[in-house]
Image (cartoon, rainbow, N blue to C red; front, side):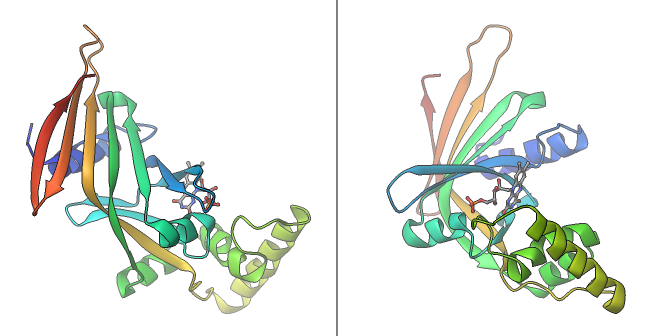
Length: 198
Ligand SMILES: Cc1cc2nc3c(=O)[nH]c(=O)nc-3n(C[C@H](O)[C@H](O)[C@H](O)COP(=O)(O)O)c2cc1C
């Protein structure tokens, strides 16, 4: 296997998708809140490539605010079919380019509604009085969609692109339990590899 961890990440991501691994697009993103406590949530991997790891997020959400405040995160991926784990840290940037807006416009309407609700009903993760406000907000948007055939792009939705600088790859060995752990750190643009005791 290549000594470039991004190649390995892309390789296993593509294998997971092709092999219909139930966790192919799922990962856990950990951030640190203002009290220094870890916050963790599942996210969806929209694209994994040499350029980085794309996740769609609401830029006003707690996770985005936590990133803005201290820049710390760990992305944790596990693909059961390959019995492999990736732990990723690094930098990040945001994108909201034309391709993304275009892609958003092509999403199923229920999925668009879920995004727009954060602007018409209440910010993501804020306290709401009941689930009814969500249902009513969605009904109003469905009506609007019926009338216009389109919903306006919600400005708070962005592509969060993670830019790995540290990748630890744990490769499980079911037969003898002698798992392998490789730590890759980006130094002066070159990946340095060390082995860790499993
Ligand atoms: C399988 C799964 C995939 C999810 N994918 C995303 C996602 O891609 N982007 C996102 O913002 N939230 C996603 N969520 C919801 C988040 O886990 C979380 O509830 C939400 O983003 C609010 O997080 P925050 O309050 O920490 O910002 C997903 C949840 C699950 C269970």
